[in-house]
Length: 113
Length: 111
Image (cartoon, rainbow over all chains, first blue to last red; front, side, top):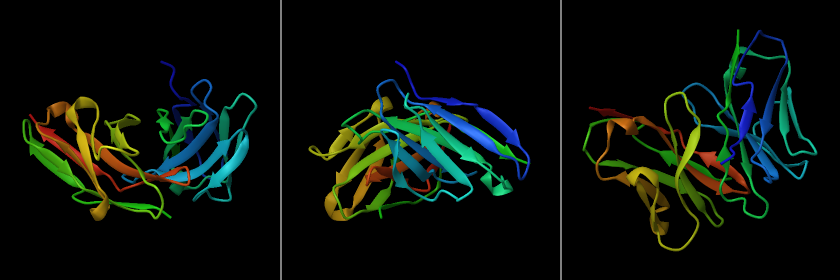
């Protein structure tokens, strides 16, 4: 079965650079969620989109922005990267009408040096 | 806002031992509860979930969890662990469509 796809899987950036993470939800899923998991930490909710509109916002820094496109894929844009942004960024998706269970992607491991 | 508390962050046990991981949640609305497993270097995988009905839910790989509403708990159990169960386990509660995770339990099973 198709799963959530995230790219790139690994990304190394320097401080103050920008990064773009991409998430492709499971086909026909219309809601996308982004989570950040720091080293040794639990995943923290960042932001979510439903039908291309932001549906909920968590602890996402102002330096970050995200959007969902017409094909339902989502991109997380991160600017002025800081060392503390080094983390695993998960994307999850849910199908229409049933938002209870979120299906997670493999994550993008971002390292800021 | 919802929150989840997990204790005993590091658990070491031998193969064939029984495992129980505690999870307490706080949320004022209808709860949807989950246990996720994260194997080393891998993404989160759903072990089991509770939405309603029978409070004892069975998941994959021999895991089960019991929802006790009066105790705001959703503890995970496995009667006999295997080396391959070495992983991090996260309890999560869904509220307002977002998931709130606990700090996780790092479980190491010694062969």
